[in-house]
Image (tube, rainbow, N blue to C red; front, side, top):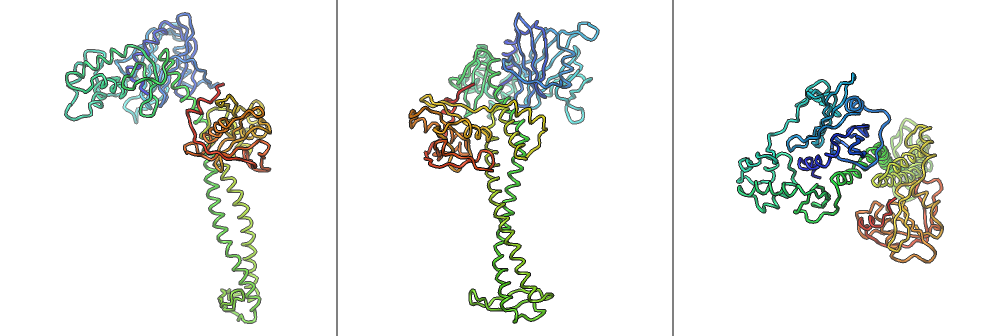
Length: 567
């Protein structure tokens, strides 16, 4: 990612179509992000502005977002002061990642007033601030109190720019002073340039270095100017850089050919951030349930450890039974008030010393050993049964943790929530649970093999149960990783029209959507649905199967992406 000062400069040019546009409506979708509905040049535009700590940005968007019913305080202030206003000017401060939207609006008595919407794109310090024409703060989406911060962002205070080091503006003659700021003997020229020039990112400095070949006092400023000049040609694209995706608004020669290009900068940013934002939102929503599952997993793990200790202790029961029998057999040899007695163990023909309680009779000592034996025997039986159940629970929670890693939609979060409620792990309001259940229709994930056959994948227990028990037909092939938590996978096919390649591709999907997705040569069992049976009384998603065959496949993300059917 490189939403630097140069990027801001370019996207402001693109957003010039919003100047003289009217802000018809403002909506806030979360704690840090808003969408402005603007009418300009006879068209409607949606402008997204975000101060998200990871996804701070501003651009036109075509995506649909959900908005809370109760407007937050910042949104109320924004609607009061700038909704219905006209955007007079959008300006960048220097070459920094600070932008001002100057808006002509009306106050409570109908007089024309100027309001300034300030966006600071600075990572976790990003902010959105509304001020009057004299930069008195009306509201900030993030408040900074005077006690612990270098500046104050609160209503009633004067707006101050973020404290930053004095840097050169590359779009003015200041850039000629750059060589003076650089110590060529100390190395790390790229980092020194970043510290000396406003609005440059490491990605852009790499491009300057690519232009220069090797930085010298003479070629540094010409290389900066040449690279900035080339950057006037808009070429929004996504590149691969050291194994991760990066985007930029212009061509980056040092990264070679891009992976994907876009017609506008807004389309690029909208595409790049939307999936990431949506995924982060889903993960945030799922986090509470993940914590619950993790807690239950750890609790079950501790329970298994305790039950194993109980079984080890119960293993002594046979010795207590033998002591009772030997005391009964040699009762006549036991003298009163002794703390032990030595007798012949007729099981081993060896002498054995039996501890005694001197305060009770020999017969009571024998009964005490029988009582301890019976108590441990019951304890062993109960611990053994509980251990079997705890191990099943452990397998269940392990599969849930895997499913939480694969969550990609809000519907899947709701399905997990419903399952946890049905299993008595969490409580849900009755009316809320019923409403969700009545409205929900389980959506399976669909893929196509090279031969065009449909493969259906369940990514959680509700989807797995629906796919295996209701959706699939008896002759359909069912796939699951062997002894590894994972998804149920079914390949639907007409009679006698399935080939080995289809089987291998379906098995590959089963391996990819399992705990073994990062492994190689993963064993995957497959059999016909008629041989798959749900275990009575077992946790959701648990089945048994017979007549299976096993293939070994290696998960392939690119292949999975190419097989996916988009809806």
